[in-house]
Structure formats: C-alpha cells, structure tokens
Amino acid sequence: AGALRDAADARDRATRDAADLRRRLDECEGDLKGLRIHKEDAAKARDEAERKLREHDARVLRAEKSINDLEAAADARVAAAEQKIRELEAENAAQIGDRVAAAIRGERLKIEREFRDELAAARAQVKAAERLADEERDKRRKLHNRVMELQGNIRVMCRARPPRAGAPSALFPREGCVKIRQPEYCDDADFEFDAVFDPTSSQIEVFDSVRDLVTSALDGYSVCIFAYGQTGSGKTYTMEGPADKRGVNVRAIARVLEAASMRSDGVSYEPLEISMLEIYNEQVRDLLRPPGAAAERLEVATATGESVVKGLTKQSVFTADEIEKLIAAGARHRAAGAHALNKDSSRSHSIVTLYIRGTTAAGDALSSKLHLVDLAGSE
Image (cartoon, rainbow, N blue to C red; front, side, top):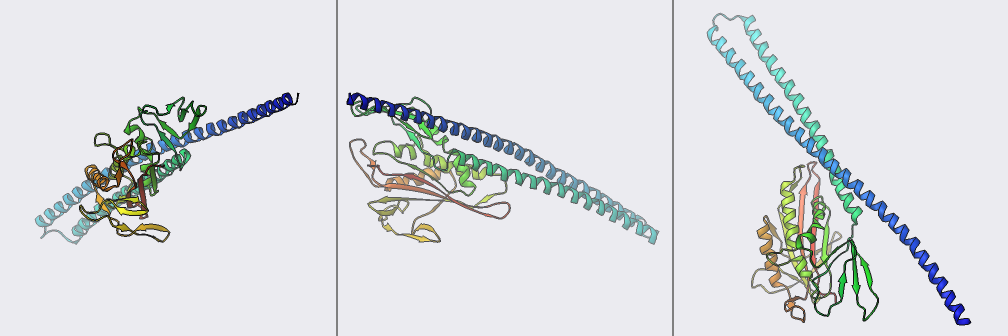
C-alpha cells in the first residue's frame, strides 16, 4: 500500500511538473512570436528607409545636374553678353556716351545678379536633398543594427559534418533544431540553436547567415565570428575551406572590401589591414611573418582598455586575391598534427583580424575590427 501511495504521489508530481513545463513553453513561444513580429517590423522599416534613401540619392543627382545645366547656361549668357558688349564698344567707341556706357554696365550687373540668384537657389536645393539623404542613411544604419540586435548580439549556430561509420546519427526535425540519437547511452536529445546547417549545407549558405554582420563592421561595430568544436568536426573547413570552396574568412573580408568600395553615403575608408596570429602552447605567434623567419613569441599588452600584440605583422589588402594569398601563407605557418580523423589537424587557435578605419560625411571617425577565429579542438 505504501508503495502504491508513493507511486501515486510521484505520478501527481510528474503531472504537475509537466503542466508547469507546458505553461512555460507556451509563454516562451508567445515571447518568441512577439520578437519575430518585432524583427519583421524592423526589417520592413529598414527596407522603407533604404527605398527613401535611393529616392533622395536620385534627387541629389538631378539637382546636381540642374546646377551644372544652370551654370553652363549662365556662363553662355554671360559670355554672349560680354561678347556683344565688346562688339558694341569696338564699333561705337567714339560715339557711345556716358549714358550708353552706364546702360551696358547695368545690363552686365543684371545678368550677373540673375546668375548668382539662380545658382544660390540650386545650391540650396542640393543641400536640402543631401541633408534628407544623410538622414535616411542614418535611419538605414540604425535600423540595420537594430535588426542585428533583434537577431541577437550573440548568436550560436550549429553545422553538422557528414556522418562517419559508428558516429552518433543526427536528425534535423525542424528549423534551428538538432536531434542526437545515442540509444546505447541515453534517450534522444534535442538541441536548439539560432541556425542549424545539415551535412548538405554549402559554404555559401553558412556565410550568408553572417553576411549582414559585415555591414555592422563597416558602421563601426566590432564583430567576432568563431568556430568551436571537437577535433575533426570541420572548424577549419568552415572558416578557411579549400581553394574551390572558400570558407567564412575569405568571403567575409572580400565582402567588406566590396561593400566599402560601393558605399555612397559619404563615408571614406582608409586602406584595410589584416593580421593573422595563432595561440599555441600558451604562446602568441605571428602567422604573417616573413618566409623563413623564426616563430618568435609575441607579448600581449593592454593600453587604453584594449589588448595589443606587440610586433604583430599587419598588411594592407585591396583585392580578394591578396586576401586568399595572405590567409594561405598564414595557414602554412600554423601548428598542425596528425590524429585518427585528420592527418593535418590544427593544434592551435587561429585569429584573423581585419582593421577597419574611416570617416563619415560629418567628419566623425569610424573604427572597428572583424575577428575571424578558428579554435583548436575543444577536447
């Protein structure tokens, strides 16, 4: 009888716990739905701001063309009037009296005054259009970074590599979820992430999930993307990739170069610089050191609240080909060792850093870093 009562009590507690869990799950789903709606609204507002920005840019171009046309027309009118005056003065120099000369001077002043008034009005229109365009660009930048915040300042994504014989099988029951099956050890377990990439996912699909972060880096926000996992799980493949399937590193830096060159909101950038280091056996080593140079241990110092690696090589990059060559050269210097899963497994933490500096149209300084990290095996 006592055992039955205990079993009934355990059943009641389990029922209450299940009801409580269902209530909490409903609350979480409600919060998630609200966040998704908020994110969609912010994205729509950003798209509308970008549309208005394009319209204002078009107005600026039209206004500038109008100014050029007005200046050309005014110059032509002034030149024609001056030519006419010179002809009259040459033909009638002996006969023209003071009254005629004053009338000529008055006509010249009138033409110059009309030209100045028209030019000032056109310039005022251009300034107004540029001011509105700057406001729309600022709105776009704020909305973009707000969307990034709604998606999460810290995002955790999972990529599954193709299965090997004897490895635990993984299922993908829904978006953002991985189900691990290990019946010999425990029941099936579901794991939730901000994004999940199954074994068929391509390098481009993985990069597309972080592409928008590049815009934040160009707006002055530092960004860090790193790969974490056990040895042989595909971290270096995801971050570096082979020559025909480039990973996040090359794609992200190439995207920064492309976006910086196409920017039309008055922001100017200094030449981008790149560094590449590894942390191996508690030592920091420069991966972009000259060929044949010894792998000297570098010191890390902290100044003005920022960690600085003394003596670290930085090189300017201008094209995607330069990026690939530098990262390939750095990868050759990286410490590696063989194991059962990979004969050239990385044995160190690799950190590629892109340094972004620029100036806004208003004269404000922009400074940010894009860190791309390939960690050593988590074990």
